Amino acid sequence: MSRKIIIEKHPDSNRKIYHVNFEISNTVIEDFKRPLRESSKPYLDKLGPTGKRIIKKLFEIEGISEVFIKPYEITVSKGNAFSWVKIDPLIIKVLSNQRIPKHLWDETLWEHFVRVVSGKWQSFVGKIK
Image (cartoon, helix red, strand yellow):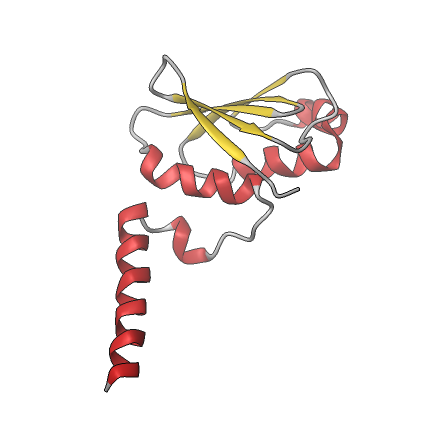
């Protein structure tokens, strides 16, 4: 079974819900706020290794302020000054257990698209010469 991630818009525009078809937490629901504190450790441990890794990685993403985690769902809150255009691809990579390339931390989704398309264009042009 391939991993599936469905993004649901939340009534609060600073929140999104990510539904997944694979288990990401061993607990019914836990809530974490930035910054993660030492007092969060027992709750992180209750999540299991997958949930713990996901929470820690999500809080490495600039702009994420709060995360609710359930076995098949994560609700992410961001600060007002941050854009989902930049945050969404990073969250998807974390949930997909993919390594996030350094350049993605520093570019918007549009910048990433332009970089990828221009690279493919250069490759195409090189083949027809």
